[in-house]
Length: 616
Image 1 (cartoon, helix red, strand yellow):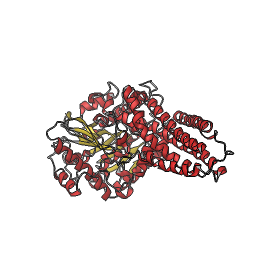
Image 2 (spheres, one colour; image 1 turned 60 degrees about the horizontal axis):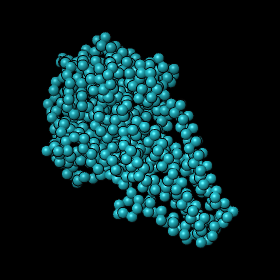
Image 3 (cartoon, one colour; image 1 turned 90 degrees about the vertical axis):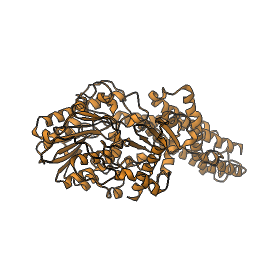
Image 4 (cartoon, one colour; image 1 turned 180 degrees about the vertical axis):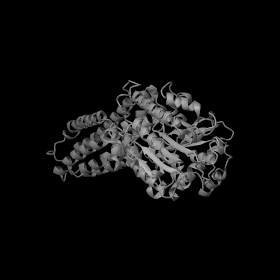
């Protein structure tokens, strides 16, 4: 019986050591962020995270505990089963842990159910990583699994030979010990079961994220991935509707921005830059000299200094810009739900109804995140994607055709196209793994930050050529070019706090021959506001929406949404609401006189959004 008990506890401790190792590996892999933590905070990630490690280790130990209990009766079956069960778990959990480490710099969150849509389209995953990264991951997987499996055999299983049969007395004892695993699984004997709040200990987001057990966090997301249930419930549905109804009905008189076209319809080109943030654009407070072409366009057109993305991934940016529908907390975006997409109207559709020729240019796979479905539903009759480029161009980057070919193709066709036209150009070269053509080396470093900055500079150079070609043609005089981004990147270093407002600030510049004069707009606004603002400028009717407002009006606020919470900022108040641990983090304005009123509105907006999504 003593042998059985020792085997049980050693097995449990084996997984505890494994998870402690991965927490250390996570901190080491994110060294730039780990260096911002004090010694006490670094220690706290292990001390506070231990409760989740205990829970995950208990889950893994439950089946072996039951198998040890029946070992007196099935000695030749139970122990080999434990051996290969452990090997399989090691492979799967190590793979998940390495994916968690690899994705954190881009996602700013521990691995969760957000990865599921990517697993359905593995090409997108492989397009985001280099062969070197794949080789490193496979080597790391092999080394970690081999070392821990050797450790398991040498110090956990082998001391207890299968020939040394356990006494029948081990049966009731091991059943009891296995049943007691319920306590660490649940997180103790407190009334509330284990949750993210149980390990939340710091005001620093990265410190709390480091305390999470990645396997526990992933399984929690998988088992709480109910998209038909509102993740927030702050008030009665009708109360939420009543609070935001003034916004839904509100309509500001548009500030006229365009030169009188004498009845001629204005061409509109929407340029969506992949992973661009204000951090890389000098006039918006970013890095000096990295984007000279966008810099000059900021001074030539209407530049929005406080324009925010509603999420942190591409599908959320497309949903916000092209559907005026914000990102979502658990569901990521409405683009992942074809049955709900049918109930919304996309931006190109409105232009189609006004007689515009519609086109979409993208260097990558157009099927990613149901983009092709969205475009066809919108009536776009000219869709150019990776498959439409010559092979030697389409294969030069992991994601597809580099930006120089994308913008050249777009310019060639738009300059010959019948007017009026509405076109979307969506680049790929500034997407991970930032493998721009070798001939472009403005930033020569090899770090992730350097490679990202070099890709940004490359995209900017290609965009500059595109704009100059338009300027040199008669088309420019009757064209509006809107330049913005799908979402930000945490790069370049120093990496931003993923919960902070600056991590969602993206460029928005309106240029073209129809723009009356250059000026700066400092109103706080967000991606979903583009539709209402643009249509009012064009003199078109736009269905009143709680999610899209006139950027030049009197309502100035923005939202962003993450898997574990949501943020809100206005001129006088900025905060982040973490729904996993029910905490509220103020960035500014916690002493604002209208703090309660704004907080109530923000909660009503968030609840109404998710109720609306469920009802679609």
